[in-house]
Length: 436
Image (cartoon, rainbow, N blue to C red; front, side, top):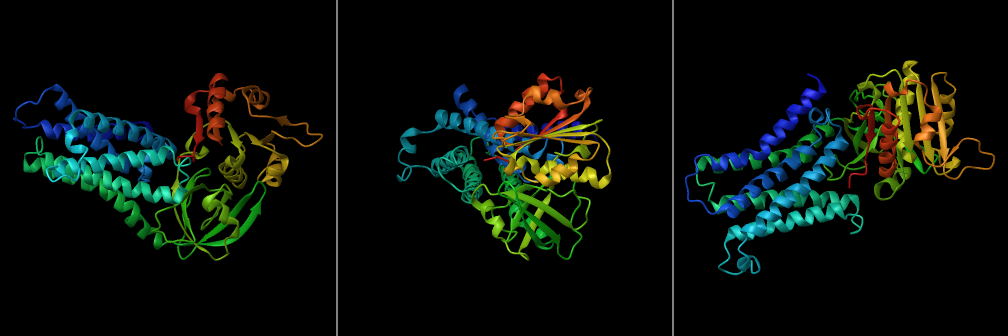
């Protein structure tokens, strides 16, 4: 089955699950109408709750679900659907809430259904606010990740209790059972991510074999599979890492794999010190235990046919690109590759010496662009632009595949530049890890 067909099927399933609770509610309902506003509010509440539950599925790291879209696209969709669901819930609350009771939730005459609704709404607002303004709130990634998981469970459980206690559309036992089953399915996804998958990872540990400092405040970790064959991956893919901690830890970090993927049982990951966990990588000891959930991602030339490939990297975005270049060298793949690598200075070019060796291959052209070039520099300067791309791409580049990885604004600019150069959007692939 093609990725396009699979993508259409997954979208259809998503929409079906989103509206299913509304269908369940109206089937067989014979009670008195309550006016358009109230009925509309109830519909928004049902769909909003379903969307909140589906958020678990979008980030459960199922490869079959992510394959047609890419994990970064799913995460972006997860964020957008979270805001849509929040909007539905807030409108539902604004129309339906008995405000004289909401303002005094602990009064004796305040029904339990109102208290549960208030708890779910507050938890949802806190969840969204902590995600949108994590950096402004100075929440570390680890603290935010734990808070996000806890608040998500509170939102679903409290909303389900509210729906069951309202008992207007869920007057039949089979309807209540369906809601409970659906909510349990959503929570089961969370249990799988937090318990089921870590149990499988626990049986397949890895060991840090080497810690190698690189230019640009980057450290390469070489990890070897301990007691198992490891996994094979396509160049450009990534994995989630728990390094020096339990596989059951709430927080795992996504990093691109920098090795070629051709050696069985060994992987390399190159991590730039940007704060939080990444600043401690250089101090890891050889022999440190690690657990890897992977491979993931569709950012790989192995998944797209083309007569040639253009790689555009900014800073640490070179990590998946070096994996691709190493794989082509190990395989003796002679398809042409043009790699444009942007950095602030020459001393900060990660893998600089290796890139120079790879540039010596007749099928590879490495172009460096520097914001602060050294004296006597004759190469490209400043940001990668459409004109810079045009200078280095050969005739017929429109049929090539293009891979872009770097800061968000840089990738946005590259997508616009490539489209302006006549490259079809389907041939432009990006990898975005700045998810929160």
